[in-house]
Length: 259
Ligand SMILES: Nc1ncnc2c1ncn2[C@@H]1O[C@H](COP(=O)(O)OP(=O)(O)OP(=O)(O)O)[C@@H](O)[C@H]1O
Ligand SMILES: [Mg+2]
Image (cartoon, rainbow, N blue to C red; front, top):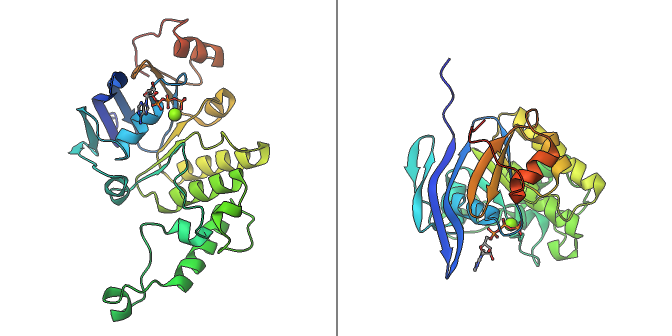
């Protein structure tokens, strides 16, 4: 059997912010159907990597390929159009808007016919209906009012809206940057279950997390990032959590083999 080829791949990504090199020739591979965790110390460049893969920053050098074809995303909308949905560490929700409006932000449904195509009228009813459906399908939120302003939700519920949006619209890849950092035990569990559900439906997922038990629970492979680049790929069945932390902090030499 031929080895499957990566659905999303990066080679030699470089991103500098002034004198800081956030990405220093970073490589990345995501295979079909897997949960890939990305771990690394604070400042290692994890969020920068995700931003480069999702069009939120344009790398100074390096190449990104999707299904083997070189791609260039100059905005998050480019990446979303290509099927990559991202929940950023700093949540990109619009606090004053309601839940349904947030779900459809940037891809609003228009009324059918001329009202929508010429007058650009929004189909609020359809968006609310679909928002309610999507949220209940995902079993993620216990929110009654789909028009409740997101600023009145708790941090965890907001995170839930953002994760629901990515799960509902991601068609190729879902990227979650620290999705459980602000969540309680029960909400974290829901997000982890959602990650598993999505993976079982065949959706590849990138999970950035500092939570080793979460990482070891759901990841198929673990990309270890250090000082701006990938220094190892390990698996929950080949390494322990303390190995992972030791590699991440430089206390343990990473074996050069990439799992
Ligand atoms: N917009 C920016 N302007 C200047 N420096 C930045 C910017 N974004 C990131 N950096 C720097 O790039 C480096 C990598 O940051 P990044 O956010 O990618 O790390 P991270 O691995 O996601 O960290 P954390 O675990 O804390 O989220 C850090 O030194 C950071 O200060
Ligand atoms: Mg980060």
